[in-house]
Image 1 (tube, rainbow, N blue to C red):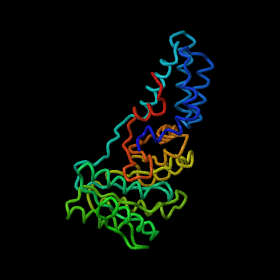
Image 2: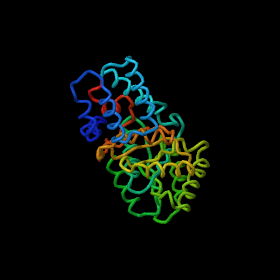
Image 3: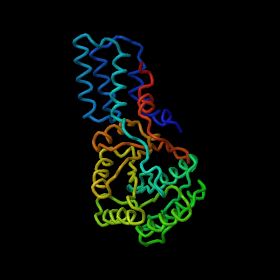
Image 4: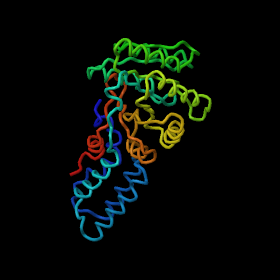
Length: 299
């Protein structure tokens, strides 16, 4: 699924009613409607407030007179908010090590498998590591996904040491010539201190398996979870030095603007987007495509 299709619910709600109007002349009422639309789509207030203040100042002074020009300014601001180095780190390291973290239900395990498929399709030789040993069902789920996307996997045993699984997977990848290890870790609740400590141990052990690892710690966040997702992310970042974000379930929400709130609050780049349930429905963040999907009629 494309970013454009995934954001259809956000675009098809209040945003489309506002931007679909044919009136080219900018009015104070239209600016009020724009502000409401952005807030309803969950775009962060810290981004909306200065943007609207700037637009209203330009409108009052007569420097901004038309809706298309106002939308161009909105687009530029939103694209800039998502910009940054969105590439996955560690390219050229052998093996590159990526940890996938997050709470149960966020789409963490499927994200690990979909990322493996994406790298495989790009010519890499990924290896999955089933390090969520606290739930036998999680190991089985990743093993099914590994078979589905035709990527090898190193799995732990239920109740086994997840850090040892990651250590073994990194060593196996080095021996077999796999280019990237993608480790699925336990779906920790950010309120469970001992599980967060276990995650810290995984990070340390990965560094012993290959100096400098992990190269990425990707936190998977449910795009429909709102402020709770941000609270989760703060705790994970304190424990595991999260380097990037994956926002999932964007196809199931009318609040796709929450991505901006997440970026503004956490100061971390969203590197990947989950846009559906299929194996190919994990796509790189493209700021311009994302914003154009929100504002389809912007000039």
